[in-house]
Image (cartoon, rainbow, N blue to C red):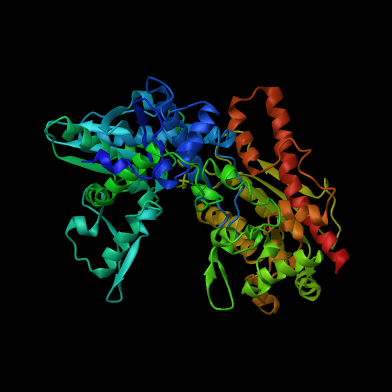
Length: 640
C-alpha cells in the first residue's frame, strides 16, 4: 500500500502528533494547497502546538464536513448566479462563513438530499442509510501510516448482492449532458442515458469511442475540472472504503458508485401535496427531479493517480511548513478559506489584479507570457509595475493611462451618440428573484430564477421623473405563485413605445423570455419589451449591444469610460458613487440582492411588525436600484 519510508522527506523534523484524523474536506483542502495544514492549525489553535486532530472523538470532523457541505452549496449558488456577461461576483470571506442567504436556501438543499435517498431506495428496491447530518451517516475508517482517513457517506445501500455508494451533489445534469466530443466531424455526448435512466460514460456502455473521447476523459480526470471535482470527491470515498475492506481482509461484494444530481430537464407540473410540491409521484417517469450518474469506472480510473495524492497529503502533514506557493484562485467557487492570509502582501487597491482579463496573462516584447503569479514572483504587485509595452489589450492600456495620470477616460462623442438613441419615455426596470435549487411553481426547473418583485421608474423625458410618484412596484409578500399577476402588471405599465433600461439586461430579458413561455397571452407584449431593452452597463464598459445595429452605432473595441475608483469592476455599486455620490445603499435596511432574497425567503416566518418593516425595506431597495439608473443618466447628460 503505502511505504512509510517515503514520508521521511524534506530534511525537516516531523511534528509531534497523536493519531490524526483526516476527512474528505481536510484531504481535498490539503492536496489543493501545501499551506493549508499549517494555516489550519494556526487558525484552530493559534500559537499552541496543535495537531490536525483537535478532539478525541469525531465531533470536529463531523462539524467540518457539515460546514464544508454548506460552503459547497454556497459555491453552487455562486455558480448559478454569476453574471454570464459581466462575470462579476461578490467577494466573500470563506472563514466562518455566516451566510443568511444560504440558511434560507438550506432547507431546499436538504430536501434535495432527502429526495435523492428515497429515489435510490425506490430505484433499487432496497433500504438506504442516509442523513443530511454527518453524525448519522454511514462511515468508514482507513488507517494509513500514522493517520486515520474517514469517509462519511451521503447515501449508502447494501443488499445481499451489491453495495452502492451515492454522493448527492446540488449541481444539475446539464453539466454532464452538455459534455461532448467530436469524432470525424460528428458530435457525441460523453455521457449517455441507459434504458433505466442512469447516466453513464459511452465507454462504460460499450459504445464506440475514439481519440477525442479519451482526450476529453483525461480532462475530466483532474480535480480542478468542473466535473472532475465531483469525481474526485467520490474517488476519495471509494479509496477509503476499499482500503478499509482490504486492510481488514474483508471480502467485498461488487460495489457501484453514483452521483445523485438535479435533472435539468425536469419541469415541475404544479401539483402539490399537503401544501408542498409533489415530486415523488414522478419517480417512475423518465425525467424525474433526480438523475443518477454511474461513475464506477471513472472513479476506478481516478484511483490510479489518487494514490500519489494520498502520499503527498501525508508528506505535507508530516512536514508542515509555510513555504511560499503559487497563489490560489481569488474569487468564486474555488476561493480558499485562507485567501486573505496568502494575499496579505497584495495591495487591496491598484494591484495587478485590477487589470481586466489579467487571468489571460501579459506578454513582453519577446513574446514571453506571464501570469499574475509570475509577476508577483518578480515583485510586480501594483498595476503600474507592469511595463506599458506588456499591455496588449486596449482596455488594459486605458486602465494604465488612467492610473498613471489620475484622470478618468471618457469617450464623450460615443456616449452622447448612444444616449441620443434612447427613446422616451424610458422604463427603468429591475427584477428581484429567488433561485431555489428545487422548483417551487408550475413550469419551473432547478435553479430557475423565479421573479418575486420588480420596480419600474418611468422617465417621461430627459430628467423628468419623480422618485416616488413615477415609481411602480410589484412585490409577492408570501410564497404563493404570483408570477401571473406580476407579469400582467408589468405589461400594463410599459407602453408600446420607449426604451426599457436595465443594468445587466441579459438577466431581465431572460426572465421575461421565461415568463413569455409560461404565459402565452403575454408573449407578444413581453417579446416586444425585450426587443427594446437596453443595458446601461454598455454605456460605460463598452462592448457592442444588439440595439446598436438598429441604432446605427458602429462597433468599437475598448471602454467608453474608466475611472480609477472602478478598480476593474463595472458593477453599479462601483459606478454609482463616481457619478451620484449622495445616493448610497448604506442607509437602507435592505442593502443588496442577497439581503432581498433573505427577506423574501423569511416572509412566512415573520410576525406582523417584522413583516411590515421588511416589506418597506424591500420596496425601498428595489426602488433605489431603478432610481440609481435615472440619476446616472442625469449625471452623464450634464458631463457630455
